[in-house]
Image (cartoon, rainbow, N blue to C red; front, side, top):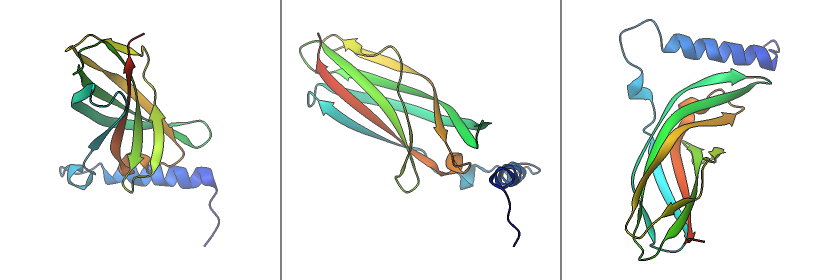
Length: 152
């Protein structure tokens, strides 16, 4: 078998992936992995709860040096269950089908400051980076890592 340079392998994979999703009326969704969410809390135990989570992965873009960017949207609702104001910091950790780490997204405008009993909806667009062109197909879990502390 002849040697194929890394750039050419990437181009062949992208072309095959694109062709597999085109040319028919049958949707490809049945073969897409189910997107899962996990929430991990750190700090003040039980002070904040994530009431709802939404996320999707819209697509990917090749970038320089055989790297790829996966983009999508997310939304989270935090609820302060404590009788005191708290600060919430969080990041989004993306994992593949086997639970291996792909990348982390750190949102801007943190910490969130929540008054007692207050609910807050946060979210927006995210971008993660990878070297593996199959990462969008393998992306399955968004782990929300939440750190809660007393408000300063």
